[in-house]
Length: 359
Ligand code: PLP
Image (cartoon, rainbow, N blue to C red; front, side):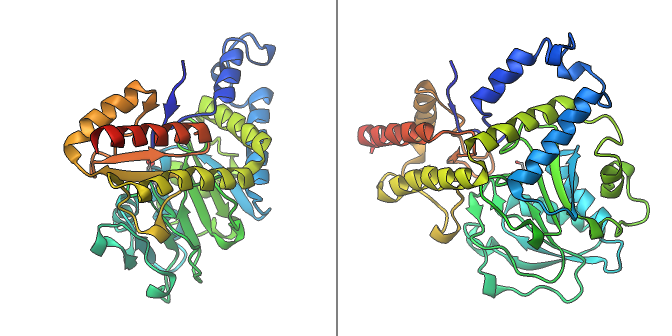
């Protein structure tokens, strides 16, 4: 029996997608083998790759002057790829907003290749908010400006898109496809697939094509966006199963009504949980109201001695993976696209009951 899964990643996948993959597993497209067992250069897989790209273009309304890349090495690979691809065009410095653990990793990696200017940080209050748009200024000569629209661990989401002159780079690993975005405002968007797209093993990159000529000399071949773009993201063997499954998720998303429907649903799901947290005397959210993530909802119990019991009982009630990140403790419910509203209703009902018995 499938249970409600609040895992932060790899995260829940839509059940119809898994069923389709199961049905097609042994004999895909009448070929007598699975999609994992055919050449990535076969006409059948080429079709999968092209359809997935087109569906993603449709879902996010990606303009024609952007390349869509299906990359390896996860979002972490892109922490390195970004400076390698963008610091060779003149400026060797980049602006970063520091909002938590993922921004920190991106910053540390970029610092190995150039000068990083931290133009804003929310470290003073333990990364529990996003710096206000009027509280920082970009540098004059930055090669790019990087931020993390949604910090998966802290559960902090930007309520605005930074307005900057340099190419805007965004780590959308945990919020991509959860609302429509003006892609034309960005230079490079990237996301590890394993939250809102598909299984782990693939990362999506969306790059404005004038940025493909700014790589540092000596850039590793596997990180080079220009080579990836020229070769249809098949300079070497891609993770074909992850790509295929991501394509099924894109089809599923379209059938659900696309990102507009996901935006509405994510508002509903997160509001249900935050409203409950705000009314409760027992559970609370550590995140500033204007920066609360729709995707990742951390919360704490009034008495942390009850954490273990909460996790035991929630799991027994069919509510999986509510434990907070190991570095921050507490709880976290991730409400990605594949998590239905009923899952959040069940979670809130369980929490209300737990509070009554233990509060
Ligand atoms: N960035 C964000 C916002 C994330 O949530 C994660 C993973 O949880 C990463 C980057 C790292 O992704 P990957 O494991 O694909 O390297």
